[in-house]
Length: 225
Image (tube, rainbow, N blue to C red; front, side):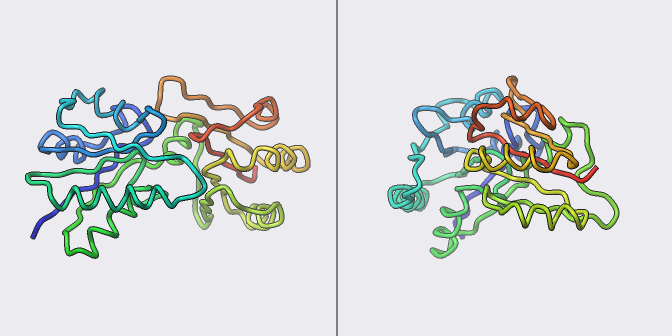
């Protein structure tokens, strides 16, 4: 049975790539990864690992709320993989199972009878917790990870019950987060931007209010003190 590996590169930088992923990349005949607007963080990581550039193919993916064109590209990539020979890999930032666009391609390949193998990676919020020097959860606490859509009421309810909240895709929520921090200074806030990269930024609590925008590669960890 034909197979394809989907490997997780971690949040950024070669030091966050697992040994299993590195070995798979070294052994690959062809590696696909996504990019947008002529920029690919996955490609940057692959080149840091000294993966030969002639094995890498960057697939341009539009960043738009209308996903019609993106789904066409996922289908085209799946068709290309079906025609490829040798050991084929699709590489993605973070972990292949957590908010990864590659899962759409995985679903198409699975439906066509292709054996899909995944390697695990370090999710950005795990790396962010390490950068912040905090424990995300302990004992009976719960961890809630949301993709940039959560009401203030739900946040207060979750935090009051002892949960830690991680908000991914934070760029959608700048004004709401600023207002929430002002109204609820009793919680602990950790803003992390571009974790794993040389320009990583970590700031806490009311210092976050000075941030005029939250870029795509940013997240927030909110905890009770």
